[in-house]
Image (cartoon, rainbow, N blue to C red; front, side, top):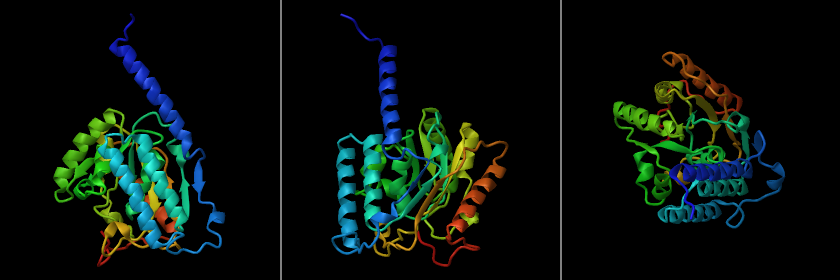
Length: 297
């Protein structure tokens, strides 16, 4: 009887994983850009049964609960994560969201883990980023503690082995992100970082910290800057993650070109901020000259 040695088994597992990833890369977004078909929204009215708020909440919670069950059964992999994410994206489209996503070619053929650095506006990006990134590479997030302590969302988020920070002590957060982030990157997992301490509809460059650039510098890995406008999905007053929609605002998401950090990273930090600012202004988003008196969180 023949036996596989460890090396052979690892090679077979790697080959299966590569085939699975190759299939995922074209399963959802095969072109360089994605734009919601405006025809599917023509003449649509939004009420209880066809895309209204109650409709969204019921369908959204059903997707989240299904993902929770999968995560609790220890079966949440990249495919299931992406599936839940695309289901939420399609649901948002049925409820009036118009997506414009560009720059897929900047990540499609990457054969190395990277650091995604993005501004942060709403719940939407947390829900949609998995289907935009996970089909192309292993990825996780830097998240605050509340996302891994909420009974509804925590099983799914914990299943992706995120880097959890408190946001209470910036020094401790830096040490943790550098330590755990460097290890994850070395093991082939990309990382998504939102340098703002909280979600804001305004973008204030002074609040956009350099944590992601520092991680890139320490780990020797490259950066993919991202600019997003996702205030279609507002922050709620009673339940922050279930705010109302503003259907007059398109959803814009853009992957920038790969960036390498040299020196102290100050120049790269300025370039990332400029990339976000340029795109937000082009999309008509609010760019704060100062911090708003009552920012959303």
